[in-house]
Length: 299
Length: 121
Image 1 (cartoon, chains in turn green, brown):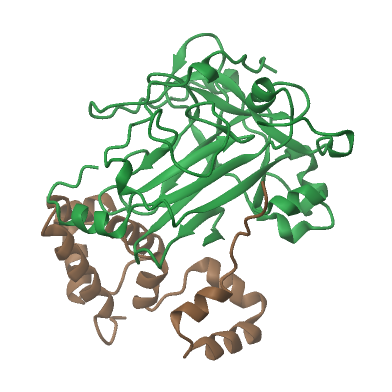
Image 2: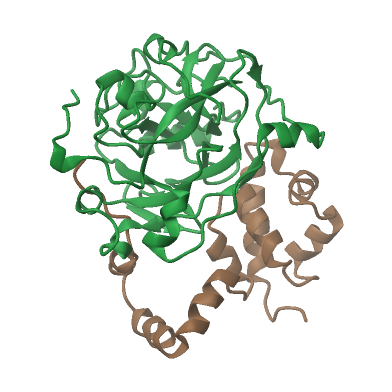
C-alpha cells in the first residue's frame, strides 16, 4: 500500500516485512544552465506539496481520475529531483525502484513495463541510491527533469513516441525478498507502443510532462544485491501528475509554492553547489536513447 | 519532568545496542553526533535520567535507528505536531475514532488508512 504523508509517498509492505518501508519525495531544485558543462548537485528548495487526485474530482479531467495517484505543482523555471528514504542507509530496507516520466524509463529510455529488467538495468536500488536528479544520459551524468506542457514536443515521451499521452511521473517499488533481507541483516558489513491520442484526448491545459535540462554529474549505481534479491510479486506503483503551477490554485484552491530563483540569480548571490562523491562502485552506463533527445531551451 | 517509567529510553538503548552488535556506527557517541546532541545527554535519556528530547530530535533518532517516528514519539509520551493539528480540527470525532479502533487488529486498522489509489495507466 502507498500512503501520502508529509508530502512524501510512503510505500509500505507490512505483509513482506515489518521494516519494508520506502519514502519517495519530490524535491524542488535549481534549474541549471544547459551549456554543455556537467554541474555538481544544485541546491534544494524543499518538497513539492502533493495531494490525492481523488480529492479534486470536480476540477481534474476524467483521465486523471482513471489513472489515480497524486499530483504536484511545478514551474517551468525549476527542476525536480526524486529522493528515496526510509531510514539511515545502514538500517533502511532495500528496494528496487522503477522511475519513468511519460512512461519513458528514466534510466533506459524504454517504454514502461511493470516488471524489472536486469540488462540493461531499468531500475535504481535504494540504498545505496539516495536520489535521481534526471534522465540518465551517460555514465556518471544525468539531464535534469524539467516540466514542460504536454503537446509542445519537448518531453522525452513526445520525442520518442511523437505523442503526448501520459505525461507525469511513474514510480514502482519492489521490496527485497524478506529472506534476502534477513541474510543481509546478519552480515556484519552491510554493503549495500505508445499510440497517438485522439482529438477527444488532447492534453488537459494544466498537464505537464518532463523534458531534459542541463547536465549534472550523478552516478546511477548498479544493483549491488543481484536481480534475484527482489520480490517481483509484491509491488506498489503510483502515477504522479504534474500540474502547471499557474493552474494549481484553480484546481486545488491552494496556493503553490513561490517560484524558484533562476540559476543566474543564485550564482550572482555566490551561493554554493554540492559535490557528492561516492566510493568507487559500478555505475549505470546511461541510455543511448535518452542521450539523443533534444533538451529544453532556456526560458 | 522525568517520565514515570523509562519505556522510551530503554527502547532506544535496546535498539541501538542491537544495531551496534553488527555495526560500530551505532555507538552512543556516533548516534549522538548524527542527531546533534551530546553523548552524555543521550546516555542520560537512555537511562531515564533525562526526559525524552524534542519532537525534532526524536524524529532524527527514529530515522537513524530505522524505527517508525510515530512509534518513538508515542513511547516518549508525545504526539507529532501534524497529528495534533489534525485532531484539533475535529477533536471529538478523532477521540471517538481512536477509542473505537483501540481493540481492532492491525490488519483491520491498516485497511482504514487512506491509500494512494492506483488506476489504469
